[in-house]
Length: 312
Image (tube, rainbow, N blue to C red):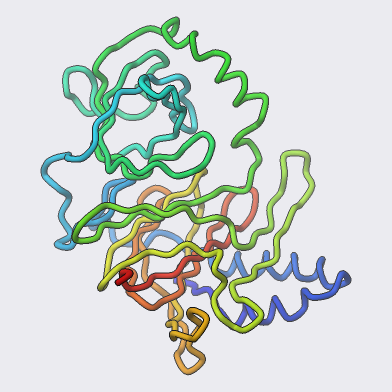
């Protein structure tokens, strides 16, 4: 695995403080993120102990039964992503399609491309919807077609479909990511906003954002979302669009008066990850900063989050 380096981050940031350095910074960010790209481990028979959209269990086995909150939705779009509308709340969302957990009306496993507009499905998951529009539901454990329906049934949502198409809600946008994990008491998800990126827009222009993970006093920026865990925990990071390569780096944190700062006495380390499709599965531990560098067809994006002990 090619690792992502915090030292490289510091070198990139040092040249980005002036207007003249912004272009050089963008180019350097591309190089750093490309270096972070990694491919799936070559383990022919081994499979990640995870279902897409569901954290790994502690013993490495998938749960035998799908449990959690259940709701009904209608399929209103299929393609690169399946778009559902909750038939009760009328809220649109993108579900994570669980590997092996999508079945037809007879209970037989099917693939996402076998879904059709107008299908009514029963969705089971942890009930945690990420705050985006349309929403994202990473913690799905099962999707079952309960009514075949017909394409005409989805026509009542045509205004919504037109609105999403007009706004270009996902086309060309820098992708967000989400991290799903399981504690002893609950399933949890957190949204990972891009912390830095270099991205080619649909019109051919290149947009970039400087990577900044610390405040002026050296503490980790409070804008990073946190996973609250008590010990080593498995996590699955999912992306809005398919990632071509992912690398993860960990840096230990030390508590400070204002929060947490990167422990200057500790060494950064590469974190082993497994790819299932474009989802990255790896383990995290408390008091750590994690940087996830992902390569996409349109560019490179860096995400970050902290893992901290549960609040007392």
